[in-house]
Length: 364
Image 1: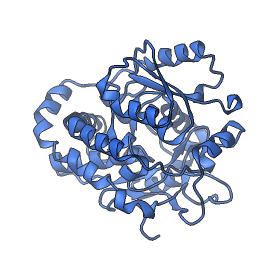
Image 2: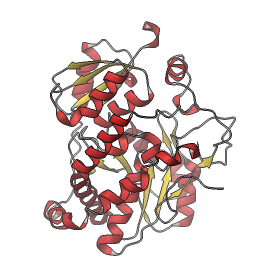
Image 3: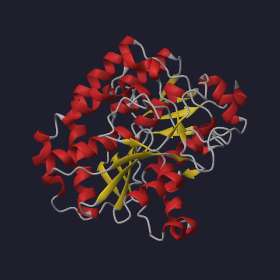
């Protein structure tokens, strides 16, 4: 394989098939029509939305504002990982939102404990499951190590449930002759679905802002029979043409530079930690939205700052709901909604600061 991402192999090993020359991106409306007609989202990739200069400036401002909180949250998550697993642990990020989080975790543990843990990125896809070939590769490479799965944040808990299902399958256990811990470590857990989180707050993780240009220029993952054979890893595309817009390394290094001055705060936070309780608080917000707007398919509801950002960047939005129309921390949401002429409405949300609703293309 040639170049595949702008990250170093010291930071992450991608267990993904490079399908850069085998797949063409499709527009948001075109993809949305296909998805809502029954085609699975993992069979296509979107054209990467190139953000405006105003939006990019806002991204840099938000990274500067949130860098210490991000460093603190990464550190808390990492300390919990080590307390739970010990030092012999493999970090396995779920592509692609998990990748920068996993790299930051690897760098934190190297900075703090001089640990150089293996870190892989693999694919997991809603309704289709985890990449078994990638998991098998990791098991064969690290037969005696614990595995810790990582992601960026929790939305509706969909990926958490997908991971639980994968780890519970008898086939999964029998094939590798060992049990798997389905606890998903995340930087932020506003939904209350993670048993190992850095912070339980719905705030902007800047890597949600820019898609591939803050994720090593790698696309979201693809699973399609004509592209992915039975022995292949799930696929992804490397957006080589966006190199001059890549923010991936700067993002990592900006947060990494804040680790040291957060060590004491992190230690205080995790000193007496034993476990995190799963509350599923976000469930009630989603239920209320579903009922209020008569939404038949729950997959049209994308709650939380990260998921709302994604809806605006790569789906066709119907409406954006926010807890507070004057919330300055949602400025990037307001900018994107204005650029795309999407209505923003206030709603009494409990767990989340905002929520994106995907447009039903039958109504177009």
